[in-house]
Length: 170
Image (cartoon, rainbow, N blue to C red; front, side):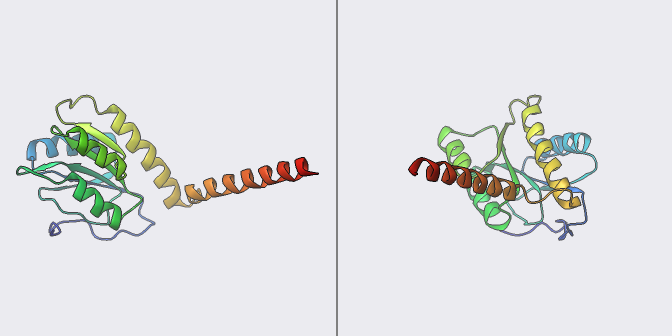
């Protein structure tokens, strides 16, 4: 896989601009999605890749499934998860069969967008909005890693559970 010539360069954590990539060889679908993303999530950076390429510098990936008759979404998802495991991944296609959809969901795909229903993307945009909100707070230093809260909650739960067990055994 090759990197698109105008791919975004590595951005420091001090840059709070959302970086979104659309990996799709359909210029009309990619252009429409790019326009909608720029309108909804301004300011943001949206790069369109017309070949199945993955760059690790993006926050959100829109991944098409069909590239000249080749099903690529699951392979692209695996590459994204290897390079950028915390990125948000949205599969977008008009040709997602159930086995592919299951493989994408099991592989860590965060949302699915049906190109046949272009006006039904509110749910996908809500997922992106929530993700970018957390990401912005992390980059601005206003919150700790969201997973640390989960770890602390589990630690507190285990401590409470152990306390109850020790009281019951007395």
